[in-house]
Every structure is written in structure tokens, then in C-alpha cells.
Image (tube, rainbow, N blue to C red; front, side, top):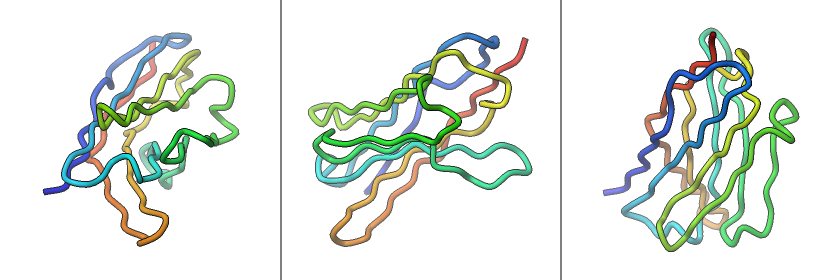
Length: 118
């Protein structure tokens, strides 16, 4: 059974930091490109950050460049999103996904809420 389970969300003040984690199971985590997405109320889901299977490449949405860092630990089947200098507009449900570039298979987690507010 494939699972992606996110954790680490919560309420944080503007300027604060959070680290999200996503643990995968039931598939060969190390060969999948991992991504973080977010969706705010009334808005479309957007890709926040992505990292290739061997961590050889990562990319970010312009809105988070310089503030967010994606990383992965294939030994722990985990992808992380380090978020710093958080802004109220970062408030959203953050979800991770796994994509196999060869088969096109996609898996999604349920998401974790991040709220940035004073």
C-alpha cells in the first residue's frame, strides 16, 4: 500500500520558520522525483519545490526562492521542506507528491496545514 504522510505543519508568526516532512512507503522512494505543492483557500494548487531522485537538481517557485529549501534522505524515504521568513501569503495546505519520470506514476499525500499569522 502506497502512502505519503506529511507532518510538521502548524501556526507560526510572520518571519518564523517551519520544517515539513513527508515519509513515503510502499514504493521505491529513491527513484521518484519528489515535490511539495500548496493550495490556499480559493486558489489553485501550485508547485512550490521539486527535487530529483538523486538530489542532483531542485527548483522552486519564484515566490519561495531564497526562503524555502527542499531536501531528501533516501535512506529514510523522506523529503523535507525547510521554510524560513514565512509570510501570511504562505498560508496553505502543503502536500507532497512522488512522480516516476519513466512510468508517469504519481502519488499524493493528504497534506498538512501551514498558517502564518500574528
